[in-house]
Image 1 (cartoon, rainbow, N blue to C red):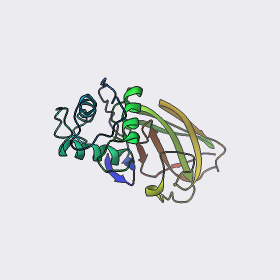
Image 2 (image 1 turned 120 degrees about the horizontal axis):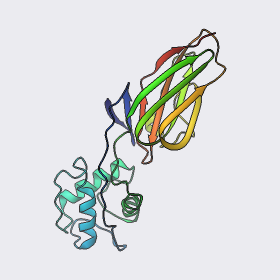
Image 3 (image 1 turned 180 degrees about the vertical axis):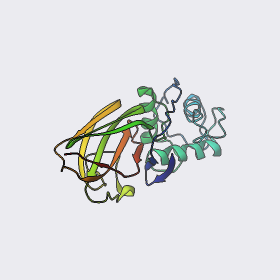
Length: 218
């Protein structure tokens, strides 16, 4: 899988990805309402550092000292960038709420795009059945067209399938699950279609397969 960050989305291009499963951790929420910044001390800073240190990409130093220093600020900035928050390294109400909401949901830090695997595309006359699995709960959409599939404005997109920035007819499954099944019905017979599919996890991280083709039957 080839990953790149485009705007606030993690954008993954894959044919078939190997599933990867993250560990589940339990963290204490950040208590109080005080803004945490360089120089802050106490239990709230400790809770923040414990949470941030669960991901070495976010907080490579990983020290839990109860003191908010330059390394904690750098980690806070990386967390804010990953979740499209103001990246100032100051943990105010919005950043604290995001951390506490993630802890409440039991998901921890999730900056990784979901894996797409076991992808199957089976033409059945003028219908096509598309199924795949993901390593985590996702909503998904299939985009298909007899013309080439075009992507645009990914840097302006929000983690939603409501207004996709991909061309073509859309078939959407907006429920979260790890197994997806789509049926594209009443297509033109004996016709080559281009298609891609998108999977978005509960944290808004996005995976999309490279556009490819299928051919309908009679």
